[in-house]
Image 1 (spheres, rainbow, N blue to C red):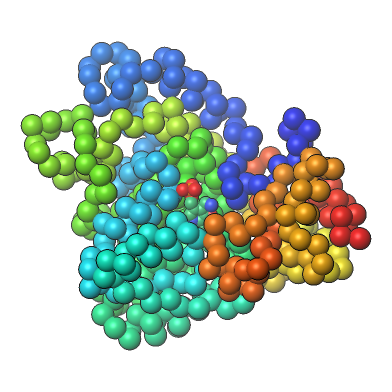
Image 2 (image 1 turned 180 degrees about the vertical axis):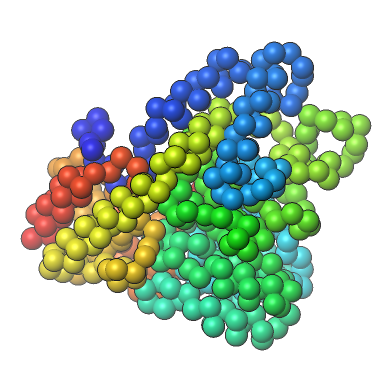
Length: 383
Ligand code: PMP
């Protein structure tokens, strides 16, 4: 379906258009519930607090988290990953990480490496898939505090064996930290069954919420230091942050409109998600089949038929990725993203560090006709 005449295939960057339920919830938070949540007892503040509570419960239910207090609202996935990595790792610790991580993981790790954390990288294969046996070998070759891996790649769409990685990490007394930015919303998730100790997600991608909020799940009982300190609305006489969740990790005024929108999105996904995932997977197959027939194109990531997140990236042997993206936009009003996608490690693994790639991100609202039009445009541009 085209919106405002645009065929939007950049869902891996952010989902668009946001469902009307999400837009309505944002407006409601800005108007009817415009007070500061958890601060004050007047009706506008209480209405805001209630929206936060409801959203936390809706997100927890969608993600299979029994106690909503284990769901922490953070400004975004990048913030949540920083909190997780810096809150778990200390000087002298060793961390095992895959070779396909996003800069939201690799840059905080580079900073931590500069302050005495040993970072051990495990190479994924050329399709971007991580082999659990390789991770196990790396974990067993030294005392390991944490294993860090994405659930799905924003470049190749590859889905990593995070359940196996949880078992491997736990057998070695380590914790598993998962970057779920590209999996959440696009896969049915039960975080407690999955076994990740920490799972971080963007609110604005597959979860269909507004920008400005992300989700951080921390397994009950796991001690993780908070990243920032400040007002929590309660226990103000205490010089330290409260130890209770989620307050410990949510210093400062929360982005109520974004959180309310995310809650509405979670309730919508609870109803729609199964159908949506089926549709996304059908469109991914359609797109991959079509792209594979265009001479000169190489599709990155797992081959057709292997489950992947709804992300399909391609490189052409002659035409630059940014040229293709520019033409798709300028001539066909098709929105995609070209470049390194903040993930140079993944591009090194797929041998596209010098070229980058054109990425098609599929999500809610994309139709088979959109894919047909994108394929038609690609065959004209690449001819
Ligand atoms: N990890 C991955 C795999 C991502 O694709 C992204 C977003 N591009 C992030 C982390 C960071 O998410 P955000 O920009 O929402 O903080």
